[in-house]
Image (cartoon, rainbow, N blue to C red):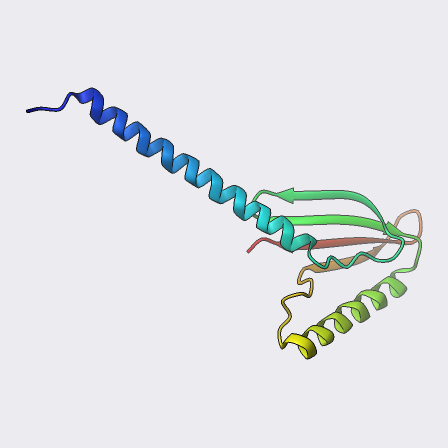
Length: 123
């Protein structure tokens, strides 16, 4: 007995739809995980004001802040804050799991003070 071609196509459509839905759910889960990893223990300089935030889906996150302090003061704070957090995490747990592992760049701001760019890839 032959199957009607209609049932074959409806089965194929259901499989394709299921794959698309599953792929979307997985991608959104990965994106959510990326966002959470960026925000986990994010080292924001005291008194910093966020001026922008950007993300590229499943690729990277970036936040830009401005402060009135000089670049040298801000760089020293970041070097010490990350070093202390890393040292404490390694002493307590033997790993750096709870330490923010993104990049930071501090530049002089055009109106004085400093601009801080915090970024982290999703990979």
